[in-house]
Length: 588
Image (cartoon, rainbow, N blue to C red; front, side, top):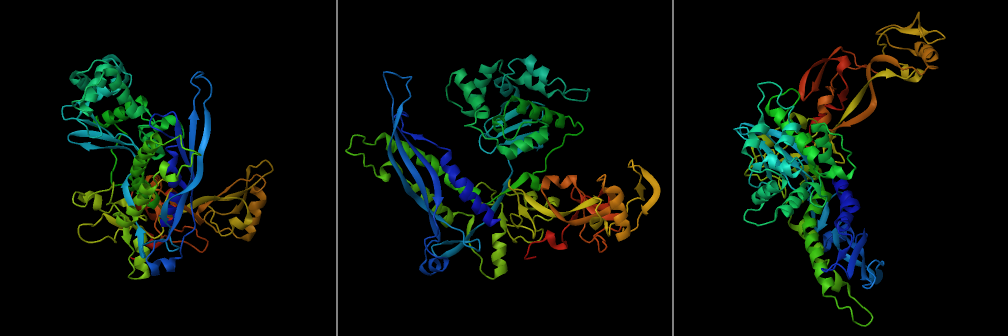
């Protein structure tokens, strides 16, 4: 887990810091620009032992290619392509990045430290109870949070980034449904019986706006009270909050969750997957209103389920720490380019005239030295060391505060099974907020915790070496030339297939390549199960009775589904636990 997070930073996030600003122009935006590309991290400057002895930082130098280009526009002929002249093109040192030692720690000023992972709320859309009815929250990767809730009187209100509330119909108007009729038309199928409340009708009666422009002005007044703005600019601003990729990035994780929850089919890779458009908003409101009317098949989300929480590893945490500094950095570069003297002799520009990498270097240093997630490595014994690297915290920047964290967040949840140890957590005010990874769990690409399980099979390819030792599910008959079963039985129901029967079955079924049905068994094939797949699978206990060929012997088996333990028929089982101790951490 530690190594993956570190590799992510070097391979993905480090370059992403600079690719967001491909060309940094001067303030006027027409004469000069700088590109910073091809970031590399050098080998460590000193060995681990020397760094510990001399109290140095074990790190490599980050270097980047800095290129300054002058753009000369032909003023007489504006259509002509402007000529570009490279004034400066050299590699420069950005700063020092502490490198990970082979034992997954960092050495900062001679002291071993470790960056622990953080568990936060996943991106996506979440429905939950609010006051008298329900509400939903949209959490994009970056951009405005939208919260829509139904008040006690049935009025549907929205908030953007915890602003003052306004009617949801005002927001729908800015998205193109300008008239009351068009809004009613879209939501007409919400009210089906007389028991259903018409929330849209109640909201329209309370909505002070009449068209897109008045709605935009009304919403802008709520977002930025006291500011004057013309209606068209207000409309562009509000639409931009949800429809411009510069302002909002929904992200692949949130888009997958939105698609699954609302039954949309947007491509995760396409540009429209990253914005939250009218189609998404209408689907989200319809789901909310159906939930309020207690329709079948609409349910609220469990905020404490691990499918709604993700783990940020070191790479992502450091990226989030350095990103705000990048804005300052770009600003300072723009300032420096604007005052750059162009008429000097041979244009001998020093790197310091162009860019100030010091702030990025200081930001990385401050993260490793002072961040809440960068801690002294526990070196009581080797086990304490390993446990410290597997620690996951809900505290820290962007996380919870221990004073305000509720009891539900700290509690053990059924979805922790095999992912988070239910026993090991500190006593005192951090109980349940600092947790430890279970023995075999791992973190997938999206940051969700997965646990391994053995796959159960019920069919075998007709090859004698695979058939030996399997138990026939029903009588296995010989086949005639046309492939139809004859009356000759090759293997009786519930008997083990021996070498002779296996050869006969291979001869009959091999030509047709027809799989043979057998009693449930498992090979060594392991599948990692993410928390959202938990409800689709029935996972048997690791103590299930087996024979020497790994066939399951009993008909009724203790297994778990939806996080509940129960007894199931053997034909319902899809997976089996890998090991009895997989639910605990190494320390437990």
